[in-house]
Amino acid sequence: MIKKWLYICFIMGVGFSMAGCGAQGAVKEPEGQREPIAIKVTSPPIGLGNVPGKGEVEAIDLLEEAAKRFSAQYDKEVVFDFNRFNYTDEKEQVLDKAGTEEAVDFFFAGSWNTSSWAEQGLLVPLDDIIDKELRGDISETIWRQNTYEGHVYVMPYQQLQNTLAVNRTMMEKAGLEKFIPEQDTIAHWSTEDFNTVLQGLDASFIDESTYAFMMYARNSQGDSHIMMLLQAMGGSLYDENGNFAVNTPEGIAALTWLCSLDEQGYVPENAENLEFIDSVNLFYDGQLAICMANMTNLADCQVRGLDVFLVNFPALDGKGYATTTTNGFCVFDNGDKEKIQAAKDFIRYIYTDEELIKYTLGTLPVNQSVMNQYKDEIPMIKAYSENEENLTTIVHLDNLNWQGVRDVFYLNIQDLLKGTKSPAEVAAAIDASCNEALELGRAK
Image (cartoon, rainbow, N blue to C red):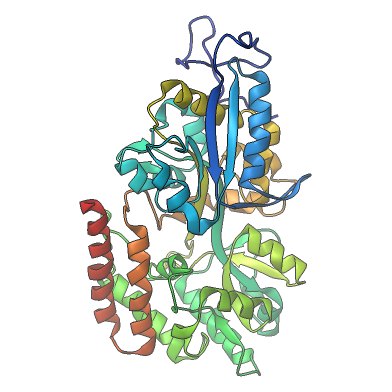
């Protein structure tokens, strides 16, 4: 049974205050004495994967079940109004409704825009519902992703930890068995190991349309995976002020390395014209040996009969890097303290209910305790849990114009792959263009 660490009320005067907190089975106020608290809940079609006992579900399925279970035990009457919108309609369905009677109260966030919303004062901080035990149960890398100016505005619920997937059959045919990890573990290769593997794979291919490693730069899709590769020579994507810092000896060396992969034919030809999904499809079709993967991709590989294992993105120290994207809960500040408190109580309740926490098992929980509980039941959860020490941050809430960054970053990688700029010129251009985008967000 998952610890009930988040749902804590006053008991004998001990603990922290939580207005409106109701214990399981609390008696509700008599109906008719007051208007019910109306909370508008919205979410895009964020998939939560294949949840054990439930099948393929979305965030809205979680929220609807959570509302029923929460309402059955809460000491006030709450009415939930649900809205599922398309990703492309986020501005109209969320931002444009702020300050109106249709304003959203509760949002399941899978958005790069939450930092901007926090900056504009549209969201309420959630620090008061995070106790010491919860804080210690989730990686600090994940907390940083959901923190803006020292306050948590998105309560992380589930994650997708991104590593690389490797075709085991191709590795065995290339005689590279020594690089294959034990079953259900994640391999850790140094950048030098990576070069050895790519060279060995390339030498084993008899088909000119088969490649060792992914590469793409047609648009911004998958750009964070390319950013991960820029740390392969010991550099960091950002400086201490949160600005891009690729124009360093380490950053230039990483870009030079990417160039060499293209020159040696390890990556698809004319990769600047390929999308991320093109690499995924090549991988599924057996024409690519190494591609980005997470829990969802692993499930797809199993369905397609592919035998794969995972490896971190390369690093000089041999431990490698992984990155994670998280989804979670936001509460909008619509000026109604009772609504805000009920929405916060709703969040707190979700983390106390074992059936609701199970919805994270279709992707990956953020809570270490949950991963520990199910590590022997669900393949790879133990491996992902142990890999958390290798997580690095690509996007965090202090980036107020991440879409602006994405709009320019891939253009620089295009220049690199086309050979129109040298690695040093590309490094300078990445810093200039991406930092200009970040500064534009700060100015707004």
